[in-house]
Length: 259
Ligand SMILES: [Zn+2]
Image 1: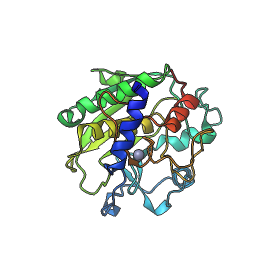
Image 2: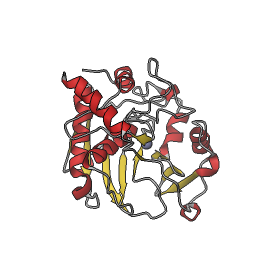
Image 3: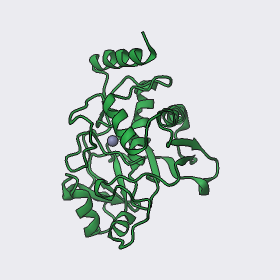
Image 4: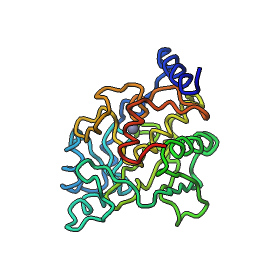
């Protein structure tokens, strides 16, 4: 059995056992989190992707959608309205931006629950770095050098276990990921790796595979339950096993290139 076959077999085995968990759990009351009136252009951009405008709320300057683990930087509307978008904004129509940084650096701040996700995030960064010659995700101890800041945040009304910011049109990856320390995070180590791969996927510009308004990447299937970018994140990932589907490989080839 080749290594690749082994990955696939293991994926299907674990998948068949129904070991799945979701990044989109049922939501709690979020209305009280509203801090400022939402920007009309931001609401338009987000609801264009199939989200209900009434589910959009703002916290700490980021736009959230109730029950969804993707967050949006408020600068996105400015960047999309710009007459002269940055040269790096290659995939404006599809809301996909690759980073001019390419060498993406993660900074873990003091609130990041390292005992839970330090290892899984490290291996998730390795999985992304190992799949494409144009993705290299490493870590820095200097915050000002970081492309993505990862942190912990206690929020009893936020349903997802982790959230990740989408690229917002400045040519760089999404700038932030946070772990909601309100939740128990009692899933397996491998599932933590999968969750971190999934959230980094949002930072890199990938939507959920079932996102109604998102650009459909040519050559990828319309239904791909085992995709790491499915909102019900599949099991099968381990520190040493990257369970990419053929659709995942195609989405990476299309946007970043494959090894
Ligand atoms: Zn997600």
